[in-house]
Length: 158
Image (cartoon, rainbow, N blue to C red; front, side, top):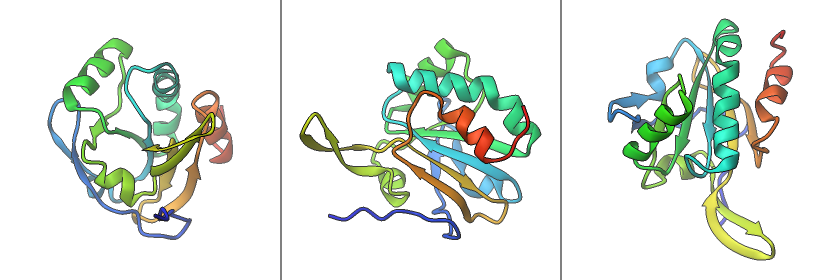
């Protein structure tokens, strides 16, 4: 199975997913605004916690530059709610339990770890422009340091 990967200029696949409170959030809700959509494997794990906290700590800077942030994982809303509470996260985390959105964005597929091949979440970040097109697609990003690099890549002044 070959994974479909998104590239700059592609239309961002729309979605409607429940957030940590169970409220449905759609990508189209943000039309007219730039959005950072990031996919991560599991709430509460060390790498995902580091990445989420980096987004939290950089949120004002991203918002001031006109970017909203959405995090998506296959976790259930209840697990996301606990993650939001534990880490005082201030942006929506969305639940994609059936992995349809992860798959549509090319963020779920074959991974290799220590020689073992398996299906899993590919840590990925996308910049969606105000018209709903992919401006940037970053696959296989590192949890640590990614948000700082993203801010540099976007030309957002510190």
